[in-house]
Image (cartoon, rainbow, N blue to C red; front, side):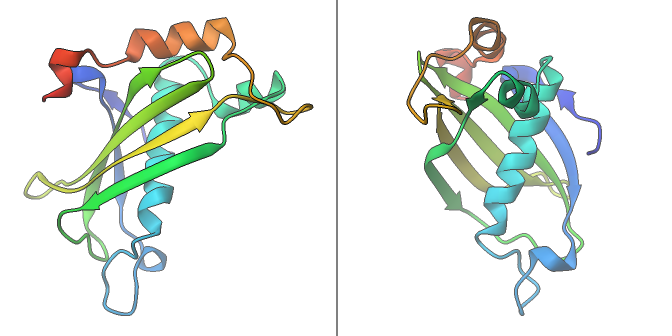
Length: 151
């Protein structure tokens, strides 16, 4: 994945170029493809703060998505240069919420805003479990404050 950069407000920004496989017959990014872009942002957010989903899986921890939402404000099209923005919004004992923005680089227009909520689940048991403390601390260190949320 491309190099990410941390920005004000706890956002991590990841560059992305829309490929043909992201689009529908009209050349517009297919609505479900945005969830994959959210995942790219989330993975790079975790990496930027010293961890990966694979690290958690090696510890026997899974983070399945239990809720997702997106507001489509404008269309992304084939070959658009995008910035995927991701940040940690809320960290609870067994859940974490990430927020995302997809921005077209040329005009800095916000195309999509969204979120995912993840449960922390033990791989062996399949049951909810507490986030590992070191991972939880990393997430809390990146979490957006209420004042920054308005940005």
